[in-house]
Image (cartoon, rainbow, N blue to C red; front, side):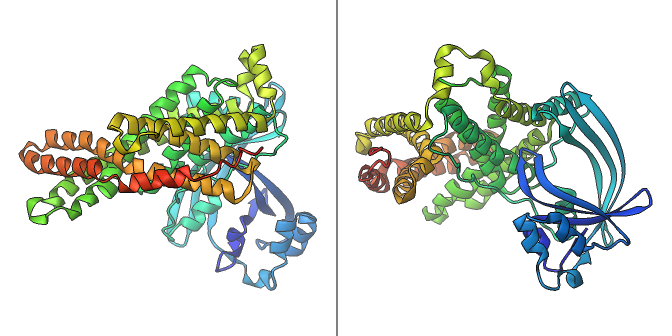
Length: 473
């Protein structure tokens, strides 16, 4: 694989390689496109070359009107700056599969990626749709998975090659904005929202499986929560099959446990640093919580590396892209799916807003249960505002979601303190000799949440002042 010393092509999301095939040299350039839960759609150009060096003049002709590729190849002195970055040595076997109305190529790669002295093994199956419906690709992948345990590879060989020796860890990926058009039906908008949530879940797979960093796990969990919220939002139009519902529940449980301990270790316990120090051996507690958190992280990583996770993601993407909800449609659902999304969004957002106002009415004196119900209503309202926001455009939506986020954060740390009470009881079971210290920690946190309502009331007032951006539509 070739690039400049400062990785210019990689930054443009372009891969350039020269490989030996049956005694001939072939150059390939891949650029642009999209990734959906491990399924890559990329533009690709290929030609023979005389030597193991790229021929940029030929590639410029081939890329032709593709603006991104053309502007990258126009970089002055690009040819002189290109250097071999790493070598991929693989044996490839390929088969042509005829499956229902599709033609699929299955390639099996076995070998290594090498950079200087460093090397990592490669053992990959690649399915490429040559013709026919994309659903066939998922069907074949799921059938293969029944016999061959595998993970979805979200990182290309090029990404893995560049990461060799550079200590590049997979990063956490936040939710991208959802782009809806005003003339969409509910069905098309729903599909776009589901796909957006799935992208966030799949994009954090490598981060959860290969690192112990808290952020990829947090972002994958956010993706799951957004998906569950979206499924509730569109429940009148589509119902997730029960086996996928079970898997969703299972994964949420695996990630939720690890995330709760992360929050305790990184956010809630540090609140105790304001407590009188001599009264409290903070380091010991921090150490015990850290140990449990690490164990939960390992369990989450194993879950994400399991065939069950791979099967779940593939089946879920197949259901979303193949509009699986069409299978059990009655007239009411069919009507709901064909409704204009703008009307559906107006009703939904107004109902959500009213629910928040109703549940927050007596916020100054609300008990823990009422605050919990308010937090759920706010989360639901915020996600809906984010999904449908670009139908209304502009600063008003941003101000509205920011006010909701402020309120959610205020209620969030109180909820974290409530969760911490149970987790600290768990620590106490394991370390009985420290029960007096743990009781002190629980009491201190509970008192802080009960007596400090200023931030909450302030955030509530800020939200009450907001105009609803959809009110005038």
